[in-house]
Image: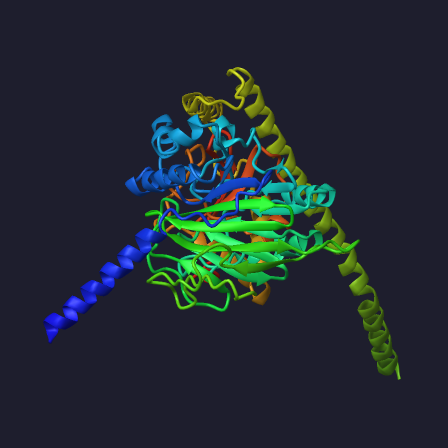
Length: 323
Length: 199
């Protein structure tokens, strides 16, 4: 009887493995003409084997989804900051991407130091916080370690003057997070969220908690935590009311495509398995009002698939479930 | 009769005193306020003097511009730190955070951290304080392996603004003034966060 149970269990595991491998390297992004394409990684810079494996997976996916740049969500160089660290924790893992002309745009994490802003391949141009534009998208790269009044004033001015359809902020500390180790940066939220609401920031990317999480929209803004592109705190994601989807069983990275009023996202594990995907739609802008997006999970993915070890809400990608 | 008059005069005198005393007390607060302004001016002047010295010393090095050569960045930081530490070899704790400034800062920090209003600032500090807090001294290089504690942003709204070359950084309960380009500790307020406010 035990043998039969064991055989059944092994069969289930084998089926799951086959299912996952079939699912691996599947692109859910639409590859629309003239879209803005990028990747997002966070808490990656430890130089460990897994960081290199995630980088390898990013390269493999770039064959199908030629993203042009990468958002680095902080903890870009963890531990030492000697020249060899820049090499082992950044230049070598991402060498093929760098050689292919992919640009990396960094922000500081709590393991980074200020002088990294002078490292040309981080594209910070000597600034602690900065902004850049790609197509119809304006990105705001912030230093959440040190949110001084000057930075807040700068952000408000830049948001006010941004005529872009999409406004995306990214920084290290998540304003909303179900990570058990750190959780939400509530004090920072007190200062930043009113600006996001006032000026219609649609999407925010952060790291710090070493997991992946997509948070249910908060006051009209979508929050992603991608803090597991090198580091990982397995099992650290608590089930909270915030979580729309999450993954804390392996390292991961995100691919994003913005085409017109739609932002498509796909989150992929170190082994190439898609653990979350969906599309966020920017609502039509009403004069004088911020434009709020809506999300439809599961765009392009296999319907209703749930990956093992999900945290309750799991990774269901049912195309009918609209938030 | 005389006694009654004396008592009446005394009561009158006391009532006059009671009327005038708060006015005197109000006047006494004015010098207190100007002392605060003077203390903060002293702090600002010393900060400016430090930044001028840092810039003068940095001018003797090759200019650091964005570069792909990480060695250049690291060497620049080390060279600048050596020059500053040498120029300030006699620097002592309290040179910039003078006694009076320290007391002002302690008050601001205590107010920012205590009570229900201070809950978020306390949480910010507690979330990121490393388990092993190093003991730092003036002219020490901030240890690169130790993660930064987020400086509570609501506190930054209350402390005097710093030029971009410097930052307030908490290390455990100590507040440090950090030269962000040289990575040096410029000054320290030990135990700036009162005991008991952090777990």
